[in-house]
Length: 102
Image (tube, rainbow, N blue to C red):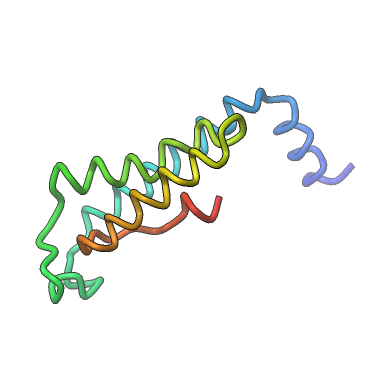
């Protein structure tokens, strides 16, 4: 048995809600960490993004936390994530887009 098969077997032993919740938490941390970067690095200063705001935090959490319920409600989770990322893009908030990919 290879290490990859052992790793896969370990993930299969975990409940689905635990894996999805952990995934949502990791994506939320990645999304929120992008707010701490300098806006000039993303060329976001050119479109008016000046830094993190409460709206940015709420949108990025809305773009990541629905991953916790993606198995029982996949369409609803995708819709919430897509709308939140759309508003974030419209406002010039830097995002990774991981929520849609996952």
